[in-house]
Length: 218
Image (cartoon, rainbow, N blue to C red; front, side, top):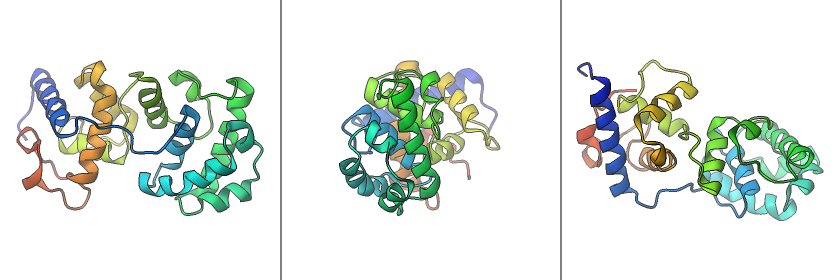
């Protein structure tokens, strides 16, 4: 790909997010939730797993433990049994229990509304915090960078190909996309990565943003 000026890259990024708006006008988080706390727990479970798989285990999890106090008091082995089909379930069971304890001790048993507070909770990184803040509270604190967004940002030439730090990828995307598009852009890129620009066999011929993408091999 020829060297691209900062202005040209930003213009292309604006065109990409506009096109994604046409392709996925209703793009949003595909995790099932009924409260900010439920989305926080579901987003924590989704790391290195699929939303579909998480949506299969959370109904029973939230039936057994409908609020932070009940999950905070749950036995580790009982939580593990419910979420055992989700990747890294030992660690995740520990983290969601400890996070529920933290919510009850410091945040009145509710999901906090700031990035700084969310990042104090066990197992919560910027990706999870952005999902919760953007989806439940409409707060544009950053761009969700999951495995799909991480891949697409490189393929689309929006971040260096050799970049391995997801926080730096997020900063690159935040600098290119308008702040009022940060939440939407994350959700839309995730959908595009799942449906079209897949990891193993990206469908360039059926891609709605192919003309705006250098199609870099990742």
